[in-house]
Image 1 (cartoon, rainbow, N blue to C red):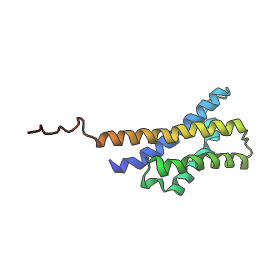
Image 2 (image 1 turned 180 degrees about the vertical axis):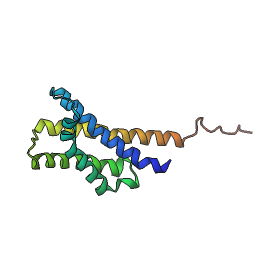
Image 3 (image 1 turned 45 degrees about the vertical axis):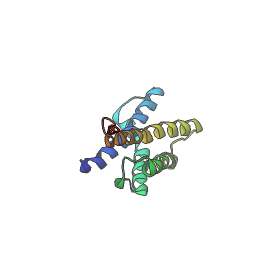
Image 4 (image 1 turned 120 degrees about the vertical axis):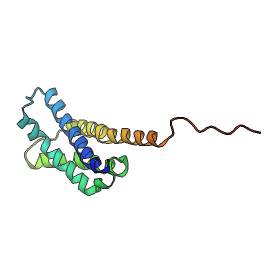
Length: 133
């Protein structure tokens, strides 16, 4: 099971970025052509991978702290920086929406994973106390 954890976590993180891009492009009536999605997503995907390297996410890929709290801001800031360096724009509203959406999704799936871990660690029924003599 452990050997699937890192690829699954990378996939979920990349899916968060792709969903963000697809929803954003739909909101602005841009086409969903694969090349358009790739053109918009690549800065954030590269920054996401930088966040993975910086946080050493492969050690604890599903943890909110520290992994998610490093991956999220690195993805947002790095993605914005790469957009600017390649001639893209970064309006304040775009930065806010990007931060909120990627924060909710990159931290959100990790929070769900933590909840599932906690539930899996607890017994299905509470232990019974022996009757008093």
